[in-house]
Length: 172
Image (cartoon, rainbow, N blue to C red):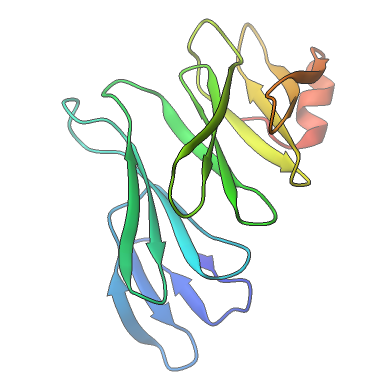
């Protein structure tokens, strides 16, 4: 279950959007393995993974005001997209897929910038450090954590000790 920041809305494990003041089901969302409210409460971001190998995962944006999915970004079948993180200002999201860190605009889901984290194509996690930096962790014979500038995608710091990876909280 996920609650909006103000606690007025909730998404349950079946993808039902609820008004928690009256416990009224407002809408059924696309099937998703992860759903997050943006910090301003205007959108829901979801990660859908299909049950078939012929389709790839996708990220979608649901606008609460219009009650519609307003943007969808599909990925190729076989791509490992396991997580996303939303910037504190709610204007971008970061995705680690198949060893690539990429940022997309919210709500349009237009590509912004990208960088290779791991040439091995492993999956990973990301977390925003303010609105201008992204910490991204990937499993490569242990774990590697890199801190990226969110605009230029240059590596600002490369952590190789597992202790650092776990203390930042972006470890899988």
